[in-house]
Amino acid sequence: MIIKKLLVENLRNLASVELLPHASFNYIHGENGAGKTSILESITVLSRGRSFRTSQATDLTGPEQKTFRVFAEVCDDQGSLSRLGLERTGTHWRGRLNGQDVKQLSQLTRLLPLVLLEPDSHLLVSGPPEIRRKYLDWGMFHVEHGFLDVWRRYSKALKQRNAALRRGQVELLDSLDSVLADYGDRLSILRSRQVDLVYQGIEVMLDKLKTRVGQVEMQYQTGWRSDSYLQSLQNKRNFDLERGMTSSGPHRGDIKLACGGVNARVVLSRGEQKAFAAAMLLTQAEILKKNGHRPVLLFDDLESEFDRDHFESVLELAIGSGAQVWVSGTGKPVMKHDGKVFHVEQGKLLELV
Image (cartoon, rainbow, N blue to C red):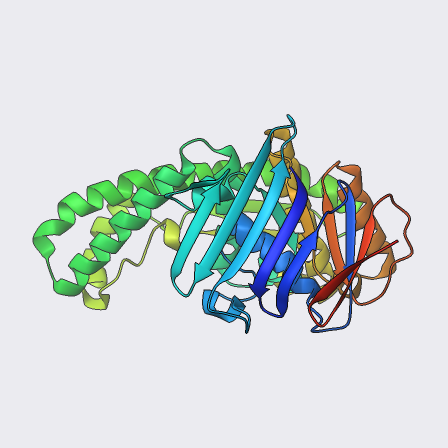
């Protein structure tokens, strides 16, 4: 996927910005707070429906009005051009695809796959399980047919069961448990398959990044301990009734990450965690590419996160993959690749010759 044109209006300090990016490499530089990260953030909002810096859409709205807008023209590997638009006002959103309103945000997000490496990406290794679950689910969203439907049905059944638990509606639990277990099993199978795909490529990617962390182990943990999810729900029913929430299931799932037989978050330094997370994300990009969904690659403040060798290795791998690469940073780069350089100052953008 290639972004051929990007328009941003009233997002943070970007009053009105238009870019005609390079198909391969784009470097956006400026001082801290100038707006360079906000440009990458706008692409992420259009691709995922949310920011990587805040969970509140209102935090993104600039001073000009109550609505922000992002528009992009994107071209897939087959040469098909699509026009994507999204505007948000508080909790309300409006999406447009090729001039027509869309009913579901996923109709837009499916058309702009991306992989993002940003300063908090090391939390993919050392952070809470929720971050690793989102990593798996985002990877499957584009390549696993039926994933979104399974995820939505599981989430709906989970909310219904939790509501019944809070109200003490024991008579509803047998039927709810059956539905939740069905979709929970399906979701866990999909996630386990995705972990296996990442595991198959992670050590090769670590070698390419010149990172030695010992023998890597990756395994999906389902979020329950019984032989079956249905059995777990039944065994923990009284406990769940006391707490008013479902204590086991895919919403508690995680990826077991180990290096040399030791938990990765314990044995790896902060720098090694960043490199390991980069390897996981670049491996995910390769999986997307092999499945016909070459993602846009976004690297926010990459040079400050890695030493020179790792920075160059990540950049070489990204550009060598054939993906469109966007990098933000505070310093003007020494260009070693064909591409464009943009300078951002106080929310205004200038393409440098």
